[in-house]
Image (tube, rainbow, N blue to C red; front, side, top):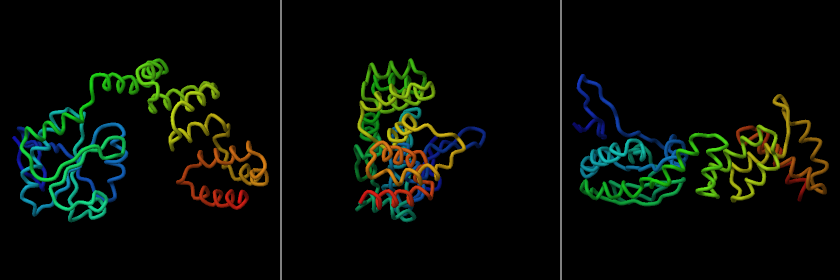
Length: 254
């Protein structure tokens, strides 16, 4: 039975165990729980507030309908009173406001409390087709054969190409990995994998000596410049030295 609990619906399971069907998201967790997660499963964002009567009507309906998808769609709830940044990002003017995201972008949405059959239509439109489910299963398998089979279905699938390229790099087939990566537009993911294919570094290499040596060559040597950029990709933005070396590179080039 659906019952209200702290502004969201829960399932009252015999024996006193209560299982939540949604995730409460904050300004701090929105990037991870919504944007990043939407790259693997459709995410519905329910913007609500404790004082909002229609929110209390819509919330349990959303929970029930999304729960019926058995994880094929995820529901998150954002208390707009406590998380103004998310509200501002969606330019919310009234609540309840509901948005659906796939691959980091909003693909659908509505405002106001709608009856269950309308909510069902909204959620059903987000469900993957049979072909998409087959593709997702192949990618999840994570083998060379499954990645290649996925590319037979969708030749430009980034997940399959990146996964296959990673496996080829482990085998030392770096040129072939780069050929696959060249099929799709460059992204943060592909730049890192391409860097792995082009640059061979020891696991314990801290990169500083190599980068310092390359600085004198980056202006006139394209290969040196590419190696320098690739090493920065491997270091990642989390490494505090990355930003410093990017500034040094810019100074040398301009």
